[in-house]
Image (cartoon, rainbow, N blue to C red; front, side, top):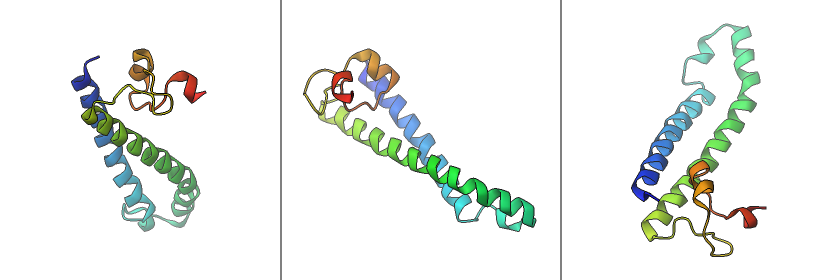
Length: 107
C-alpha cells in the first residue's frame, strides 16, 4: 500500500471538511448574510439548521477519524486494527481510509 498516497488523500479530505465546517459554522452564526433576508427566507434557513447541524457533527466526527488515521500513519500503525491488532484489509482501507477496525471487530 502506498502510504504517501493514502496520506495525501486523507489530508485532502481533511482540508475539504475543515473548509466546510468553517462555512457551516459561519452560516449557523448568521454571518453569511442569511439574517438580512426577508422573513420567509429566514424561517426556511432556520428550519434547515437542524439538518445542517447534523451534517456538521458528522463532518467533525470524520475529521477526528482522519486525524487519528494520519497519526497512525506517522506512528507506523496504519492498517492495524485497534481492537484485535490484526491487519485491516487493503480493500477496506481503500473504501474507508480512516478505518480503525477490521471488518470482524467493526461488526
